[in-house]
Length: 254
Image 1 (cartoon, rainbow, N blue to C red):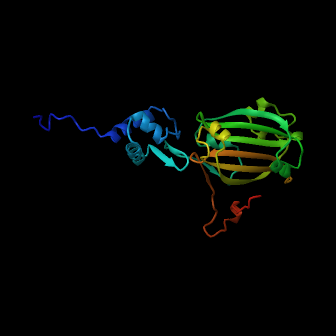
Image 2 (cartoon, rainbow, N blue to C red; image 1 turned 120 degrees about the vertical axis):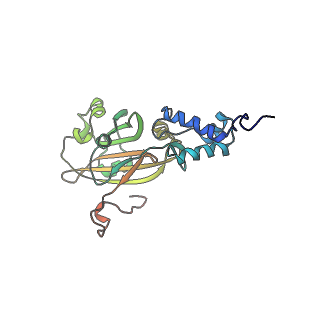
Image 3 (cartoon, one colour; image 1 turned 60 degrees about the vertical axis):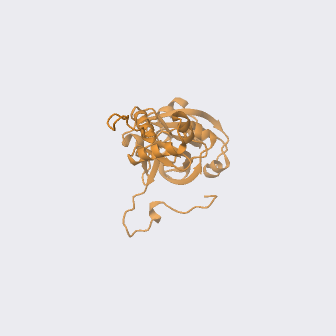
């Protein structure tokens, strides 16, 4: 009869799965804050029950390696990118200030009739519309659509918007901007571009930028994966109203 010293160590399946996932995460297989396969897919891969897979994932979450969000499932943990609402600047400048490599890919460039919301804000019948994806350290970070009046974008080229922001390219002095942030579910198109599940949470930001005289000259829509971005507001004094910070409730029609 085998003694306890001779018996093989008992296999603890969830720990084996956690160990394998840890190696895959450390090897960069999923990237920073990338979505892991679903519990169902992991269950099939490891030939284990979903309860066992979830226990392995919970162990890794306790180690700070993974996290989960409703609508996303499990993903590799990492610090979200914090954007400051009190600053008017480009997305690229904020990413680079955060120590991240920024890149933009132009998907669409052309002169079109504006959608009703943009027509209402800019008051023109033709606009230059640019759609791009912004990447942070090589990962899709935001889908951005920008509209500017045709008269202001007439001399702007596709190559220019791939390399520089409209803040630099518009032939007018810019003033301030108003930014509105809402929670949405990712459309099929945005989910594919941002490599996230369809209908998962996204933050949709509309920024309307005015010239020095207060006339709206640029409308931009940013769509961020909800698990990769956070917005912060600096409040100047603990007793001050939040009104001056730019936060306010808005109705369906803004």
